[in-house]
Image (cartoon, one colour):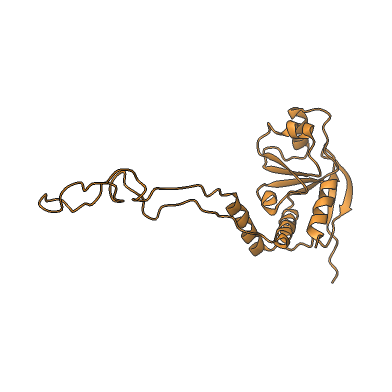
Length: 214
């Protein structure tokens, strides 16, 4: 049985349907590899960790050079240092030390994860295709109107553009829960870390080329 080629409506900034386009079936095949997404997203989050946390061990805490009291005859428990880990102000046992959390992600896995994330958004009807997105001047009101026309205001939105102009960037920066990413840099984490994804025609073409690249 031959599967129907997936289609999506093309909208303008007024939220009006201007055309319908067939999506590349090699990219939008409806398959969502959840195990792969889990692995890649965890790797992305691990790579964002700086690993600069540090605690001092007993040997690194200043002071405590002399024995607090004599070994016997005081009625108290024996103590060798006031910087023991069981004392207030003492060292930390098995505490965190600076380390590298980075995980290497093969390029093929990144591409397949991006493909799965886009299919997940399309399957859940959370992917919008925009004809183009340009701004003659930086105006927040202009961008807020676009969100309202697309019925995605008060929603966490990701815009995927093939080149982000300064006017578009400035128009959107004061609106909460709106982020933008270049189609050459978008990742599966970016796509899944939002409720709605808005992608321009040129941006979609660039993403499809990335996913199909061998």
